[in-house]
Image 1 (cartoon, rainbow, N blue to C red):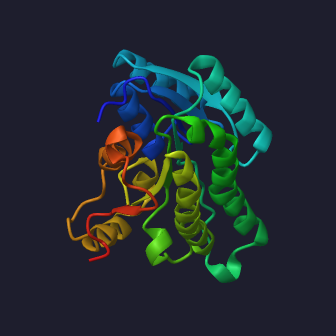
Image 2: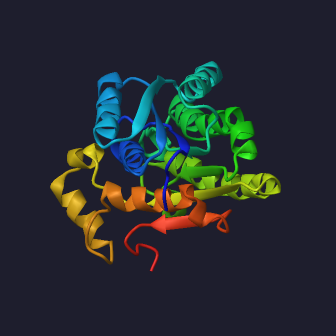
Image 3: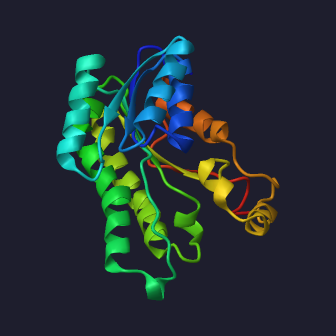
Length: 247
C-alpha cells in the first residue's frame, strides 16, 4: 500500500484524527497538504513530523466553509506538488446543545463546515481527482451519523449526510476511474476526549465490544488503504471503525 509520490490534501489536519492521517500518509511517502483554520503552530508541527520521517509536506490555511479559502488551498497544493491525487474531507466542528436549546446559528455553522466544507473541497479538487490515474475522495464521518447522540442533532445530521454524498459522488467519479468512500470512526482517543468526564468516558467504553477507544492510528490505517491503489475496486462504501458498536 505504498503512497510514494501521491499528493494528499487532508482538511483539518493540524490536530486529532486529521493530523494522525496526515502523518501516517506522509510517513508512507505521500506529499501532504496539512490544512488548518486557526491552529497554525500545530500545523507546522505536523509538517515537521512528516519531514522528520522522510516525507514532504506543506501547510495551507483555509476555512473549508469559505470557497475562496479552499481555492487558495488548491493553489498551494499545485505550487508545491501539482494536482491532488487524494482528498480527505476531515474538517469538522461541533456545537452541542439539547435540541430544544439549539439555535439556528448552532445548526447552520455545523452544516456550513461539516457539509458545506465537504462540498467546497470536493468541488474545487474534483477535476484533480477525476484526472488522477487513481483519484481518491475519502470523507471522514462518525458513528454518531449512524446512531445519533444526545445533544448532537446538528452534528449527527451532518455526519449522516456524508453517507449519501459519498455514494452519489462515487457513481459520478467512477466514470473517470476514481473512487469515493467514507470512514465512520467511533469514539477516538484525541485531545477532545481528554475533556470528557471520567464517568461519561467509562460509559462510552462500556458500549464498545472491544472495550477501548479507537486510537488515531486505527483510523489512519483504514484511510491509507482507501487512499492507495490497493483499494481500486472499493467505492461508495461506508467503513465503520468503531470497535463493534453496531454489533
